Length: 405
Ligand SMILES: [Zn+2]
Image 1 (cartoon, helix red, strand yellow):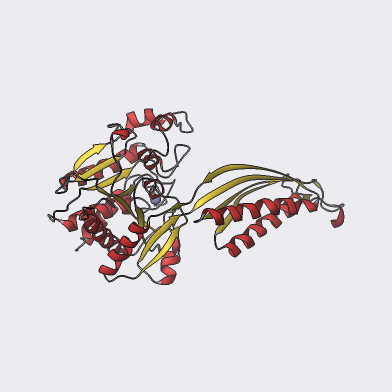
Image 2: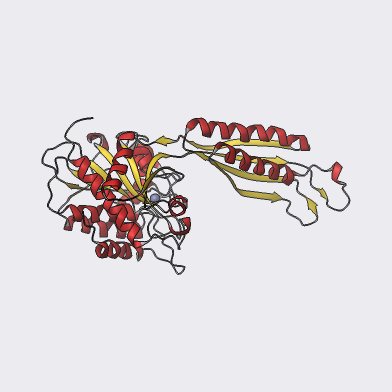
């Protein structure tokens, strides 16, 4: 299975020019001019491969390579939209890697069709939710709800689709794929630390985000003795450290990345702190345990004489991947003579929703320095090739399975 490294890199370089800013970062918001240009390029590449191009009613792009039989297809792909000033691989690798894998398959016939998909609006950097295309395809969110989403300037998803998208046939008319696999950069440092080229993704971590406000008493930093203070920031700090300890103990991750201190004077005891915590785990029971601990800690820190208000912002259930697809990734890596480990994904991907309708997994390749969602996001070229090789082998195996289970 020979992946053409030159053409793989050329495709990535071409896409990296679309929406590139002065800092080298790439900005392609969903259904923007840049997003349309990137989709146009991929459409042309898929057409060169002789694929049949279609769109669905939320603007997902699908290219179909026919099989010997008209069975549900094996599907692969990712997204082309980005975060503001993001990297060149998050999303495009899964699309370009799929093109490279199909080129490697050449004229080899398969039993099932293979479909390459470009999901619309994965990043949530324009409309108020991410994974739009896969949520629609899986039926997780009704198409009507998606059409009604509005960006911050009031433009509806459907109007944006009419301007820079491709609206196609209804999704309800389609059946679920036979299997789904997504090639993606890890966006963390686990594979690099383990010196492994491939990760087989076992689950997409779920998340809980809560907004918390600590109310204390703002007072004079010189005249108020320590024992008479109700410092809102110290209560918040104790809570942040408690989340760190709980996440370490439970083997998951917890972050307080937003914290606003009021009144914010150098000589004033903090009277109010607003913060948001982001808790993530690959298993629902672990996520629940961490969330419970975070709430218990809120009770405890009130001993400092502060009061607390809390509200749930968002909860996304963890998405287990399917054993059949995970083992498929492992087999494909082993067949290519590559080291592979099972691992959860800390970030959310379209595979989360695809796993709701068919056996799904992901192929991770190492991120240099674990960096992503920034202009310096990168992966060794040989790892890009190896990930595409594993993808090609996975597609070949699954597209030749004729049975229904
Ligand atoms: Zn992505």
